[in-house]
Image 1 (tube, rainbow over the protein chains, first blue to last red):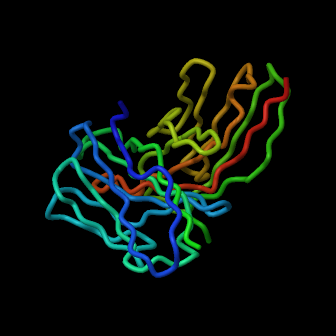
Image 2 (cartoon, rainbow over the protein chains, first blue to last red):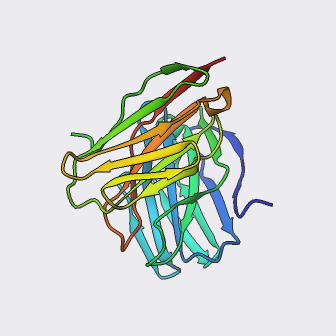
Length: 114
Length: 112
């Protein structure tokens, strides 16, 4: 099984619907991240969290919210989905301070908003 | 100015040749640098990371860092068709947060 698991892997929804993407990890890392990837724009950081009480906005947080339910779980919500949120979403984890800084990615969640 | 710049490619090389992938970054305070490989529709996987100026070798891969020129590169020797993928350069601006800033990636095509 993957160390970083994302659900759902694929989702098609309509404009205005609420969507939640979930991420769970077995790596024991405190740090978790949500990125989105768009063709030609690369990976962009949406939110990141260092523990259940520490949530931080990334460069493109508008239209998104997150919840850190436990050390191992970090979910991303789109309260009212719009077509330009169609993208491939990745959850990632990293070691705590002193690690290499490497990000460990989940398999991705492809979201299509019609 | 985008913080991490890569040529989008495609970079086409024949099998067995050396592929050279380049990346420039804008923040002189950047602390560590990563190369990820991403196959189409898959998640990025780490190839190499480098902290210090100079070269770092791992098998067929060599990462090169020049902080004065704000330049990092990845060389792939004896390129194989299985190396065909998008290569993402990432920069860690702050070791306290591990917020990686990614380039848009270079598509490498190794021709059999």
